[in-house]
Amino acid sequence: MSTSSFDTIAYRLSEILLRLNAGEALEIKKLADDFAVNERTIRRDLNERFSFLGLEKKGSRYTLPRYKLGTYSQQDVQRIASLAGLQGMSPRLSSDFLGDLLDNSLRGALLVHGTRAEDISGKEHELAQLRVGIQDSRIVQFEYCKPDDTRKMVSVNPYKLALSDGSWYLQATDQGKVKSYAVSRIDRLLVTSDSFSPDASVHEYLKSEDTIWLNQEKAKVVLKVAPPAASYFQRRQLIGSQKIEMTLEDGEILVSGLIAHPNQILPVVRYWIPYIRVISPDGLQAELDAQLKAYLGVPG
Image (tube, rainbow, N blue to C red; front, side):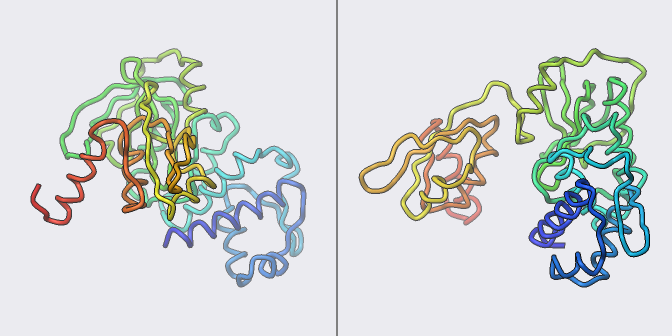
């Protein structure tokens, strides 16, 4: 399934859930007309993708159970739509599992950033175990495979499961430092019997972040953006804590932001080549140039 297809599904599911949450009784034919899809698609949305919501059907109309009406916030709607869209992408995400993730007592254990989703076939058990560790505030241990394929055993205090731009992450503290771990790289997971006392400041920090790159000591980055790309930065927040510092006489702009890791900014810079350069921190533009030369096979 393409990214655009998943985004379309997530939008449709969000709109349907907003109507259900407001107490509307929905009919398949009307929804199919509203979203310009066939009735089979809407029937699948209601009967399969939303199966974990326990929708009630009377005649041709679907409603949320009365006790659930109005209980979902905008953030809940986004999260449910993203998870519901996963049903078609990862068959091993069962309705029971998704229902558990949305249980009132567990809502605080899950964060959703973006509306894409990866196939986590084979990792459903790890997600379920991590959920237990978060809910019960129990230390978890696992073997973690780093991007360079080296492995190490870690012991952490789990706080959140985050679905960010398609990938699942465990957000946890390791000796007081907040870190993110890709669930797909976690093996030999053990939820220990040892408990920990959750830190309220960590919960607040994770709630305020819109990225899985976690570092409470962030670095300032400054970019010089040429006119062909400047308008995009002026209209949208493309980097964290983005600020237009200055507009130059030739139409270029200086844009600043705060990053926790270089990988937060390098994909943005690569996307806008040749209309953007890194002014600071020192060395980041040189690192990018070296990566591009290596990719193109150009001698350093």
